[in-house]
Length: 341
Image 1 (cartoon, rainbow, N blue to C red):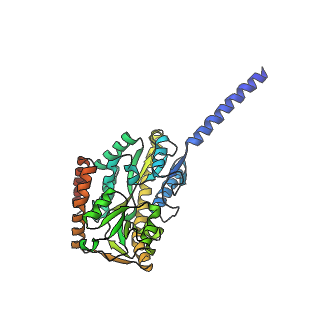
Image 2: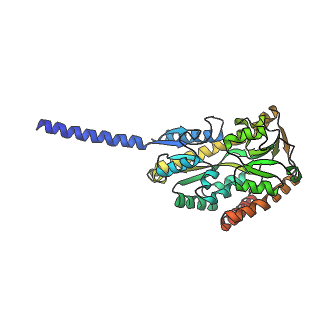
Image 3: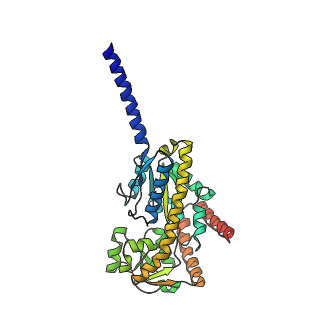
């Protein structure tokens, strides 16, 4: 009888310990991003801020996995869907493989040269963006939280000549990340070629391509200043990241945890925004120290550049993205720009 009681107590204690272990495991999450573990990098800074605020305000413990060490971009999205990763930063290009209309967020010259327009449009409370986020969750099975700035505006660089006017683009071959950039280059009189990121430095060094575009932070991080001579400002569009989470993990958060999660996201967003502005300002100094020449287009040249590029980009967009999405995006950009003025 006593042995039976001991066994019963042992089983109960074992079950309690097992459930406690499950709770601990449930409170430990994995957070993935594709950039280096550099505290000054906007992507890593975003995740560090998110981690610290979450751990300080909830029982959640977060482990950050930088450099896509858990898998490539598409694999990471699939792992978030499967619940193997709870939180991840992904690129708009990566998400577009699952939801094509996400490309609207990276429309070249789709935003004016005022980052406030973009950040207000990306806000999770913005009607246009929140609808895109809902559609992605429904179609892809991952929950977008927000699009955020990670590195300032994407800048044109090349090793042929300074670019200030549309005519200066003639004959230059640029590395393109997607079809929208191909359309932009062609509209401006240049041409684009698809080159994987890991081959970009060598391609620029050997003449396979003459130029590329990235924010200053990435140009510096990848030492592209060694194979590029000229930078053109303002940029083409803001450098973006998208924060996604596993929907089941999100739904299992308590109301208090969810509130604290969104507060953590807001803090992370501010961190990335600050680091992006910093990298933009200090980036020019670093690039000039490394021998690059920076050219600032006049307002007239920039507007001609933007209008010419948009003609080709919008032709591509209406052929590739849902027409209503393109129209709503353009209308919302105009509305926000007018409101800010």
